[in-house]
Length: 147
Image (tube, rainbow, N blue to C red; front, side):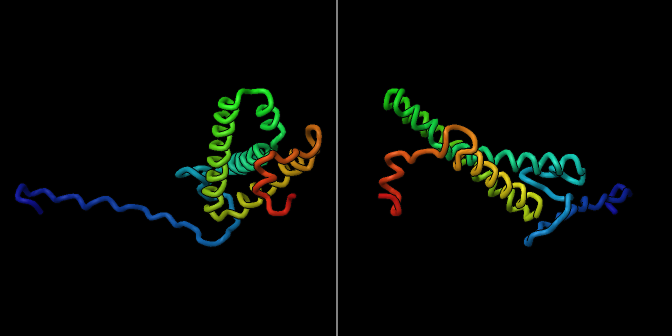
């Protein structure tokens, strides 16, 4: 009790959240953002679709034909600026996928692996487009397996 005769209110109790440190299966999880997707099944399905799309986007970025065409047509400085921007986007997407996988949710893991596989099949093997992407000159220099 304080001097005025009223009772002081106790401090609010914080709810602690449990973070998984091993793989688990279930839709009640958080992926990338607090309370997303939460406990709603539809939002969990959207999160899985989002992870699948990010992984496909990352594999599309590895499809170097578009970059090779740009390097032949654009001035050197412009091509370098575009390649740098595309690389920055690729690294950002890769980090987003890594952070989402740190939720340790089995569904998120499978969605990311399936997205990488579908993107590899579509863009790197040659299912979409004009066949496999030829390596760029700097890739040949840095690849110990290539000539």
